[in-house]
Length: 120
Image (cartoon, rainbow, N blue to C red; front, side):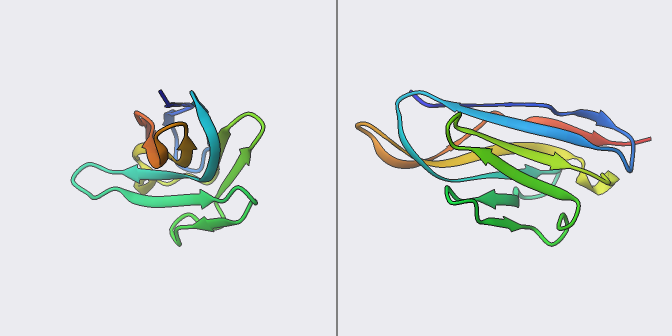
């Protein structure tokens, strides 16, 4: 059974920084892309950033230059460093992993979400 466990959310003032981390565990054969998504109240879940196993990254326009995604393939972890946070970044942040397990094969897995609140 695969689990994605996120950590690092919380309350921060505008302009501040937070770092999120997500660790994948279980019978994992290989992890392809990993990423972070977020969902604000009353809005659809949206992509924040993704990173491939080779390190290629993709960011939403709204976070480019402020957020940095990284991963450690040896530890099956993905991190999101968030700087210059704005109130509109307030949301529940979810980790997602496209991975292969035995015997289920390839599938997307989601974490439980972690709340990020940007407010003075």
